[in-house]
Length: 491
Image (cartoon, rainbow, N blue to C red; front, side, top):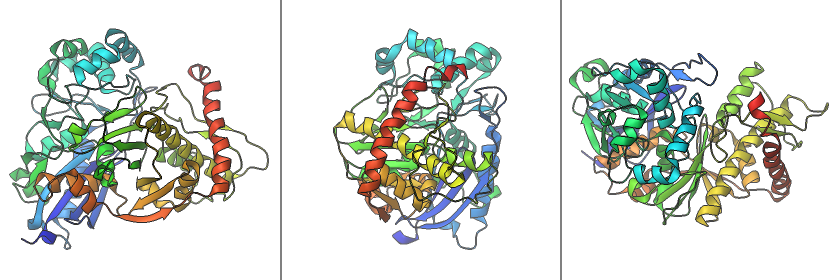
């Protein structure tokens, strides 16, 4: 089989839908499909989804691939599945979910987060898990502790604790497995050791942790039953997969070398820098070089990036038919609609518009939303720059938000550096396919697959006059949060 005839399926179990794309060895997107599902908010701060909806959506996209006239399924070399995280799925011995998944936007476990801070703290957790992790209400361990304290019957019946991509991989292969990065709240990142006392404190046995692999390692194979349902051949290798954030970083080409800044857009924003020297920060997350097999990544996830624009569209019933002002009108928007993660980690933070005047109209508010998200990106990136000492002159932009050229220019003007978009904007599915290509030994390492399969499309250079205005507004953006933060818990 010739190299260019080898195909790879990348699947992303996202917040609103399952997306799947077929790529060739050169990173060209041959075909893409998606299938959506809903979100449940049964109580304040609770955000859940039915794991079986993930599986129904995955079957739908795989059936579409299997029945497509444009795809020869016999040429499929490997499959990679990535997904939203931290989103906890508790399954019994038969692999049946015991409750709805508690997705990454769920912040009910603030009390449990405080308990973990008091009991362990950053130093103990670093010894147990191998890295310092920001302890927040959305963190896996906080939600896992919440289940053991509030739903003891569920905890007692739990056989494995999975993330969405782990659940789908189990459905595809019949095997329980995960990668070391996605399981970082349960096992030591570097050596995979499980601290029994730590798991006991969370209310679970060490057996709930699935087998650990590197994200590009083959961990299972498509079952016969799945082949019959979808048309995907049985025996196709399935790699362990990764978080959607890490996969999007990979798809940006950031893991090719040190010093590449990245901004992966979606419901949230994932922002950071790669580097040769592994460094940690209390405000950000670190994927060490040994977990990547290349450079290290220091990054932060926000809580509502593209989700802010979706909210704006839906809240005012605009049907995606609205104008975006070309002028800066000094309206500041805090995109903290679901609280905020990096770099402030404040579940009580709220969305705010400041600076409204009678002259302002819909187009001004739309631009303010785009600017507010760009400010949140700069906030995270500046923290990463301070820790690493790296000052990038460009940033790789991937994901759905990169389709908006006005927004791309705003990001460049706010950040003061060139924004580079990628040919493939479905970054998480491309990253998943890249893992499959690496795991099936079509590429030798992360650097090579990053260089060959991630391709630059367009560049947006910052405009000095806009950047000067945004520097002032950005300082006010931070002051608005600082001055209002004490009020947020009262709302």
